[in-house]
Length: 308
Image (tube, rainbow, N blue to C red; front, side, top):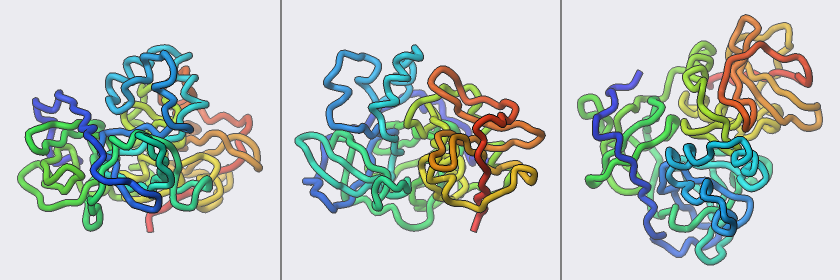
């Protein structure tokens, strides 16, 4: 459970998207320096079109509100790769002007051996941050970080190195200096029941292609983030999630097992088995995270990930 309830001042959301602080050359490591960064399939996509709903992707609350129609969310399917949370490490792959192609290190994916690839503005990155060591994780849906007099609302699943506990908040190292993080705790203790309970907390959150924050999830992003809150790193997308983990017979399912849909050659959807014939899923751009009966059509298998 979180060590502190939200502070009243946490309603203020600042993007902290300052200028890049280094050359960001290929091979260099950098850090996400906004609450949620959206990684695109090509540089400059959201600036190249007249779509107000995609002009502010570092402000997740405003962006989610702007994506009010199903059509605007479906448009993202062919343009967005993934998202990355504040403090995540990336490896620079390429630079084009003000845009950088990176691989997100702890989002494993077969597209690139370094991590999940995509383009984002260089201004959303910083360098010189060392995220190693004991860390805490945001276990509140939204966790306020106060650093240098500014408050940044972070998403569930954000990890930051712990300096010390101070009362009900964690003093943490961040890409922007030492700050105070509320709504955080040590990584959750893994159990099947906890995986299901954490996923069910996001029922009603709108689906977002590429999303892996509390402001919007796609199917595999919800799974990835819930496991991350438990201190575990699993593949980012549904198909590689299916290729890992321990196979489970469909007549031997336990709560917390992952259900996969598609074909044996390619899986396009994942859900979390919740027990009693139900599952938690982020279904598609027209819907929100929900609990529904397990569908048998296109169900190709199940996998179990367990704490090491």
